[in-house]
Amino acid sequence: MPTSSYTLNKLESKSIDIGVVTHGQGLRWIECTVTGKESHTGSTPMPMRRNAGRGLARLTELVHEIAMMHQPNAVGAIGHIDVYPNSRNIIPGKVVFTIDFRSHLIGVLDEMLKEFYERAPQSCEVIGVTLETREVGAFNPPAFDENCIRAIREAAHSLGYSYCDIVSGTGHDACWINDVAPTGMVMCPCTDGLSHNEAEHISKACKSWGRCLASCSSPSGRDCMLGVLPTGVFRPACCGTRTAGAVPPECGPSRVWCYASWTRA
Image (cartoon, rainbow, N blue to C red):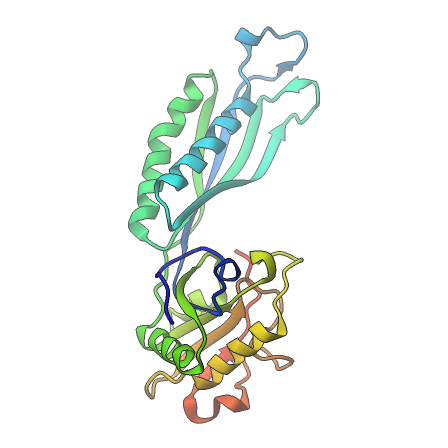
């Protein structure tokens, strides 16, 4: 039976068999440079410091706050960080880092960016550091084919699997294939909800659910690219040992093509 739509919660924690992917998240990557003044940790009085590391800390919290303001389907974090001069006894004079904002709703994505650009410079200015930004990556959120989505839901229902609509948080191949062909995607639970990580694991039972859906989903006579994968993969999930892109025999005349994705965006 279906559950609530557009959840980013992990399937395993809710004991749900199948995630029917309706959308992928769009993203914006912003490279930020916070500049202060390098000075010695021991000899520089606290009121005289222009600590670029404090700017990083304040903006890290700001990014988290903005993402939380746009729940349930928005995320944001700071990942890549370079600190200069990166010495244990020197107050950082410069920090360069990248922000990753994501949402499956373009309006929410735009609002998060607007909020950041309005508040971030002032947050740095009050502690005596400056901020420069530039966008270094972007793509808009894709919406998957309604016929493919409907076929997956119907197949899950007919097989007795519990399922819910889910948003793909990563840039899987299906997001790009969707631009040129009707596309659908199925996600299966990962152990402890851990995906896109070398420690990721998916049970044989969960894999079999996805394979069954691949063979039963047939979007009303239309060709459809259907990706069946755990919630984040580094290995083929739906095609077993077959080459990625091969058409499994069990798909028969349904014209549902399976592929595997190793994308990690």
